[in-house]
Length: 284
Ligand SMILES: [Fe+2]
Image (cartoon, rainbow, N blue to C red; front, side):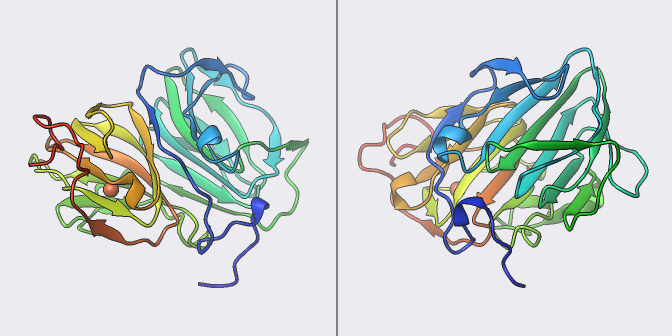
């Protein structure tokens, strides 16, 4: 990997931020007005779980909204994944691009951009690092050395087994290289056949994920057996203190997953001694 660009808080892939365990079902949390007029936002708990190093927010606009002017943020990383309706954005020197369901834009280094409009039913998930930042506005875009990438949810974007599990299809959303290995985000999809689950394991990374479709259950350590249904989100922390087991999943199971750092190891492990019996993920 090339020279590592410095991020606020000084964290790197080798010395990553720590993310704690958060369970945030689809109907939990509080909707509030966002910095974007006509768009509401729901904090998914990562600001607290990362000590402000990262935010993950759910955005929505029932009626649609006008966008704003040219702007840039004092950010190291900004990522948007659209799950409903669309947003039309513009980058310096480019034509407007409409991002519909499954489309992604991410940018490092707080580059200039503008959002032209949000369609009715717009819905998206936004990740930023750090969580809090300032915004500069201008009549037109200036020069910057940021890097922006856009991708769409196309069948050819998926590769079978291109991740830790041979039985899933993976769509790499391209954040690993621009973030110098700090953040990897991908879509993980079952391939039509229901699966047995992962077995108990832990990782040398923290992961945040959003259920896009299908259903499963997860247990983290001796915590409750938690259903995973579309719109549910969770963060599971680093290391053997955050053992977890994803129980049988449906054939249409799909998740958006962020891993911090991008490169990590997974270790299969025994279930916790006190896992409750009789439920998926229990000790046999
Ligand atoms: Fe895992």
